[in-house]
Length: 243
Image (cartoon, rainbow, N blue to C red):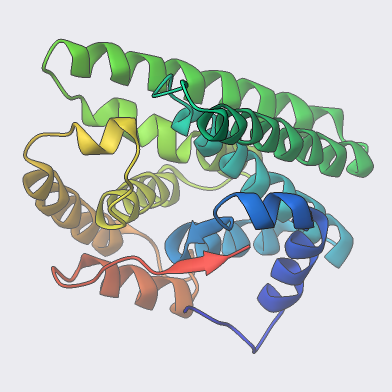
């Protein structure tokens, strides 16, 4: 399990866990978890531009929880609804996604920054469109990496532009988050249908290597750069951080 006890990452994660804590959902659904790459990129990006711990915690919480809500809603399928147990499970899953969506909005609203809410809303619409495009393409026996990149990193891309980060920085985020998702072996509708998954992983590893060589010194912290360098290694698999 990835842990960071040196700076404010633990405090930010503790805040997220307190906000997301709902015993009934914990008892009946799988625990919330994010890939370590996503958590570290989120923290490094937001911490770099936050003026207070309050601002850091609110944005970090909103970002991680809306990603969870989107993933939870994506996991909902018609499936076998003949049994009462399956119907209850599906209803709980939908409600969980709605619950975390509500928490995300509350966190942003507490910051009183309308522009930030607009940025998130636009990115969420883009993610939903990218996922719809992915389903359509996979039904036709095709896979477009561009859709997966948008689905995985669109909010982070928007935030990075809002904060004034460079194109090189944004390219690193896009590639790293998509690579981490594929290496994380998610068992959702999109990932299980991707053909030649290992070839896409190799492609992204090569791209990330090039991008890390292009980025200016100081744009990435040593910790994040070391993490992404390790992510490139073929045997590296994403670890999960429980939220």
